[in-house]
Structure formats: C-alpha cells, structure tokens
Length: 490
Image (tube, rainbow, N blue to C red):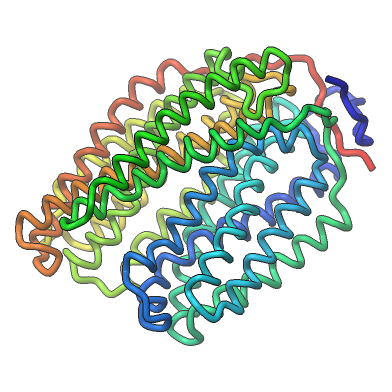
C-alpha cells in the first residue's frame, strides 16, 4: 500500500508553538464541529411541535433523533478509513456538503418522511466532523500543547449542547421548528466557504481499497446494537413488542463479531476499515474503558435530569434548561485551563479528583426528591459538570497521544464509536429503569413517582461512575516523543 503525497510537509521540531496557518486549519474545523453539534442538540425540544404540526405519533417523532443517532453509529466507524484514504479538504467539504444539504432539506420539509431523510443526510456529515477535527489536531499540535488545544475542543463539545436547547426553545416559541434549520444553514455554508478557501491538507493519504463487506457488517453491527438499545425505553413503557428489540440486538452482536474478525484479517495488509491495532496500546485501551464508563453514566444522567426538573419539581421547560446551562458553560470554559494542567502535570491530578467529584455528585443525586431546593440541584449540576470536564479533556488527549501518527484517524473513529454506543446504552438503561420505577409508583403525572424513578436511575449512574475512580489511577500521560507535528501545506 503506497502513500500519496497531498502537499503536506513535516519540517520543524515541536516547540509548543503552533504556526498561524495550522491554527487557521484548527479554527475552521472547530467552527464546523460547533455547528454540527449545535444542530444535534436542537431537535429534542422540537418533538412536541413535530407531533402537532405533522400529525404524527410520539413514537414516529422520536425517529427524528433516533435516525440521527443510528446514522452516526453506522458512519463513525468508517471515518478512520476515510481519513486515511482522502485528504483533509475532501473529507471536510464532503462532511459540510452533506450537512448543508440535509439542513436545507429539513428546512423545506413538507412532511415527516422528507424530514427523516434530511436528518439522516445531516448525520452523515456530522459523523465525520469530530474524528476529522481530533485527527488533524493530533497531527498539527506539538505534544506539549495538546492538552491546551483539546481544551478548546471541550469548549465546542460543551457550549454547543448547552446553547442548542435554549436556542431551539426560543425559535420554537416564536417561529416554528423549521426556523431551527433556517438559522443553522447559513452558519454551515459560511463555515464550508471558509474551509474551501483556507483549509489545507494535513498528512498523507493511502490507496487502501474500500472493503464493502466491512461497511455492511459495521452497519448491521453498530446500527443493530444502537437501535436495539434505543428501543428498551419503549419496551419499559409496556405494550411494545419485544421481538424487534431482541432481533436487532442479536443481529447487532453477531454482525459486530464478524466485523471485528474481518478487521483483524484485513489489518494484516493495512487494509482494515477500522484498524483494531489501536488497542495494542495499553494507554489507549485503558482510556477507552474509562471513557466508555463515563459516557455510560453521563449521557444517561443528562437525559434523566430534565425529566426530574420538569416532572418532579414542576419547573417550566425554560427554567429547567437554565438550571442545566451553568454546568455546561462551566464545563466548556474550564477546558483550556484543564488542558494546560494536563500539559504540565499529566492525567492523575485531573482524572482522580474528577472521577471522585462526578461519582460523589451522582450519589448525592440519589437523594433528590420533590422537596429538594432548586438551587441545590443547580450547584450539584455544576459540580458534576466540573468533574466530567476534569475527566474528558485528559482522556481525549492521553488516548490519542498513546498512538503513533499512523493510527490517529482510527483512534479518533474508535473514540466516536465508543461514545456513541456507550451513550445509547446509558440512555436506554437509565430511561428504562426510570420508566419502570416511575410507573410502578403512580406514573408520570405523580411528582413523587417521577422523583423515585429518577433516584433509582441516578443510582445506576453512581455505581458506574464509582468504577471510574479506580480506573483514574491507572491512566497516565504518554511520554513525549521526538516526532514533529505534520504542518498543513498547500
């Protein structure tokens, strides 16, 4: 398999300083990732409006988010290959083109079917953005500055989700659900134009052939598992047929096993769609295990908290969103500071207190009731967000820094896949437990029942988070190597 020169250069040794042209590449990718994540978090609040406006059932409306998540789960595992096979500009423009076309279709959607197709197209573009951003940063940023730059990624990953629901709430109240896409589209188009004008290629590409069987197995494997997990909540509500869930999970597990076996065979020739040799690095493997547990607890918790605020404390939707907002803002704004600490002192000084703080807060969440003062929930949410910020930034950086540059793209794809599957599993398990306990104690119209269901769901999150306290002691910052970052060329 030969390397193809894309105009990249590898010249100066790492000094901690990032050339201006490389920073320009990073800022273009950060902006595009912000737009994609912002869009991903806007649709949850729109579901009631879609039900009324399009005359569809709640189950059908939920597919607007489920189809997006499914598409992400299918596409993300392929991004390792895409980033090896195609140039930075090609992947970026393909991602933003898909995203922009999907956004335009959604804004013009005249029915549910067209909106669903639009969301799938959007998700195809979104799935490429974070792996592209993280791979490019690892290639351009010197070892001693990686924590600081990953801190900026944390800003994007925290601020976009915190702004998304607030923005969509305002637009939904005043202009309707199509306005969400009307606002996002020009931002995406500007980002695409700037990238087309200024983005340069990073690293080299390879001429590895595309293995169609791997794509099919990946789609059935990751897609089946995520779909099956997403149906657990519906089954917990009662009356749902368990057969589709069972079939999806069985097909998903079997296909995933076949996919993994296929990659082991193909990686002997460097032709794998998702090269699993990244797990030969102990540091990467430990970081992924920690990230899986954190994502499992985190995504489930942030799904239950709004339900508790609105149904147990009886807060209006806007007030519930404002309770969550300060924590998300704190998580994002702390990112650069945490990144600098990582660069100077490594992982343990961040991961250990972060895991303890997150676990302790979730254990406190198991005591929340209908009489808990709102300000206590607000403070608790901030503390949880700080604990997660202390964890995610060093994990992102340490995991990829444990790999050689050849495997950055595959490592980024694995990170995205782990988060997607763990997030789906966390949401499915905690929502199912919440639903069963709530219904057994009176149903969603009884605040005490909602509070009790939330407590038991938070208990699951607390137990999972406690395991990360142990894991935090085993993850270390990889020793700096002597390889130079790959500066962008023209």
